[in-house]
Image (cartoon, one colour):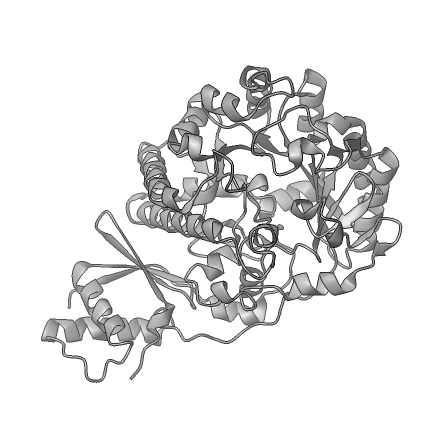
Length: 47
Length: 475
């Protein structure tokens, strides 16, 4: 059977409900004057 | 069976159909046929029991349902997580100078003094800020302090004292300080450059790209252009440290801003960023809704440039395309915005405490001072409780787990309510995120053997990679 979908990233975001929340990651100021840092471009310390 | 089609966002670019499953944070690429089936399901609002499908389409539906079973498609909304627990203050924006030697047209800080009297922070106040951060940091180990202004190099004595005292006190308290500094570059003499490099201070270097673009908006108080004044210092810094980002601003005057990013690259800078100006609509350079299509085209040009360089084996590090599709922060972080008002605070030269640097000068937002600490706990709690769930426009936005709700201060400025995001900013953010996701998908699909390079580039600009932490702790 032909495969029609390629998975690039299989996220498990909701699983981090159990493991996340340590708060040690970098601050993510979103104002443009400081090069707005979306949470998407941050790394988690535990990965 | 009803599938959660609300949790799907589709990005179609250059014949590539990217499907985001928002709740699970999964990313897929669909071919033409599977996208057609998905669109039929969306039109049927997720109800698939009575959907008229051909035999081939039924097979595709099976593939979709198999992804659903694995939790990677049509993932159900998993309910709200509680606001990030307050675990102590983590980060201070230290406004060491409410004064500036440039008078940039778009400055949010009223050319440096935030609408008040020009002033510089004393060394004593700087030390108090260090003490305040350590005392209020709870069990946190990693603490951040950003020298800001105005122009922080105008208060270099205080910067040096804070760095010295900060490391000394952090060592006693079992903490680690990371310092950063945002500068306009005017005062970058040899001694200052050497000091910054030796003390491993992360840098944001302000420059708007091409000389004529920069000099139109960034000039001295006597209206003299700044480009030639600042460039040599930046180039030397970029030779001596990797811990910087060159940051430009685009306005209505340079909607061809991909050329400005290219000009950074041509100068040899490795870590690049450009941001939209956020300013009152009554200026001639303000961006507006009517510019969005042009802005989208320009990010497409940037994406093309990024991918071209990547394929040639010379990747650039464009800050806003660094989206980590495969990992990234936990859900608590993704819903909680920037932490302003509780774990991130700004300190003025006089020692007043504000929720963040963008609120400085608005007296009603003063939360306390370094002598008394935070007195306005109620306001702090309001900020902590302000997240993507409490912002109506964020609750169902596809970008909510990438963006986390936008800048509170922009929301206050444009809508007089920190829970009502600045709409133009949202639209630009979504354009930029779609392009970032597209770029990362393309790298994943076609950038064989180079993905590692790309991730390495990404980590160079993050203060808290594991390697850097190790490095910092050794320091």
